[in-house]
Image (tube, rainbow, N blue to C red; front, side, top):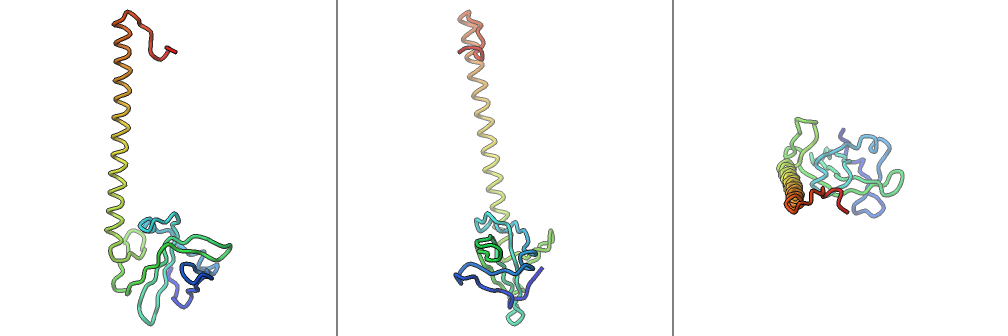
Length: 150
């Protein structure tokens, strides 16, 4: 859903907040691109300025005063010709966002892989320690299982 830019109403701070109508609140959409802007919220709204042919997207919308005052993490503005449309879900993608999101996902995947590798290595070390302890116990003619030792 795209709203016309004449619907944009700045919040009381006139900096990074908006006053949203019930319709705008209902049509705020989830955007995976919000994570590029370190947003814990996944809501976004897009507006079109018919006179300048610019799209304005507010990413990372979150409620700051019930029911209608929302802050946003970032505002993106580009001529409509520069904005891509995601074939996955029809979302507007601003220049550079696709590449940045892909890079972020790769970093997270690598970090996850490294974390899993570290967990595996830690597990292998603990198994090795347990085996060494059992071997020492048996070699000392002490077959006490390390799990029962207090």
